[in-house]
Image (cartoon, rainbow, N blue to C red; front, side):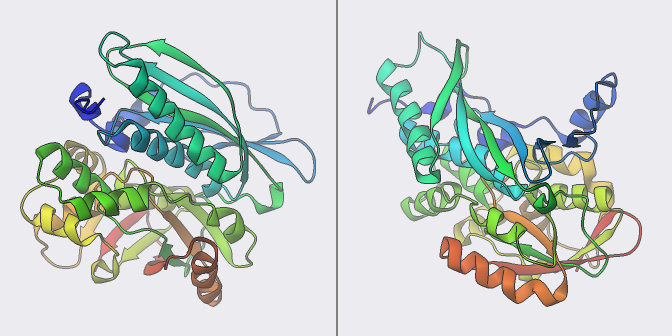
Length: 346
């Protein structure tokens, strides 16, 4: 067990494994039209975080799945991170998780059963923290370690928050700092410090449970979580779904200190480059900026924070709620504007 390094078995890690946005859009665009019952409140139309199916006037089921290859070497930590990330999509819709199913793919001939067991224990520990059971799942023998969850939640249909509900003039708020992908790249290169690893664990295992509380606030119009496509990519999804433009103030973006140091030294993920190639033409800079800044806003965030669009008079309530529920601060990072979908970085 002491010699096991999970990241040696995978070509990527965490949400950096996601298929590039442009490729995914092309794949989904070729899918034949399926059954669209009126009860399906949220499907694939806006690249939202989860599906939502109305059961009655006061209850809807939220369903999502998320899994990936290791972002860290420790099996227990990997399980915790993957489970936290998977449940984030439920919270991002404003829902309360009710149960999870485990998604497990492991190279049985390469990993000892003790390591696999610790991955499952880590995921179960996070689910206990969220107050839900791991009620089942499915496992297969594959070449790379894969772990994640199917997450199910419930929400009042009137409180569902999608990425399509934002309004011109809304303020943009982020609930976790950026840089997790950069830290993971530093870990793989052997240049991440112990404190950097601690910061990585701190943020990737912090449940976005505040989403359920934010959805109940008047003036909160839209939410999404920032994961594999980076801040710019997921903000663009909000812009396209809501038919708005956005302004980001780079100096107001929260970031993990060591991640900034590493990216300035050229440490970044390949997923950041793929993200920029997919949507960089929709991101404009007010002035010439160094490459590390572009790498930061495209950095794939494994188990990243919630991106909230709210009316200006709701900002204080959002900031106070984040602090009250999860004991951390949130940051005002920009605003949404009438106009063509796109992001301008000031």
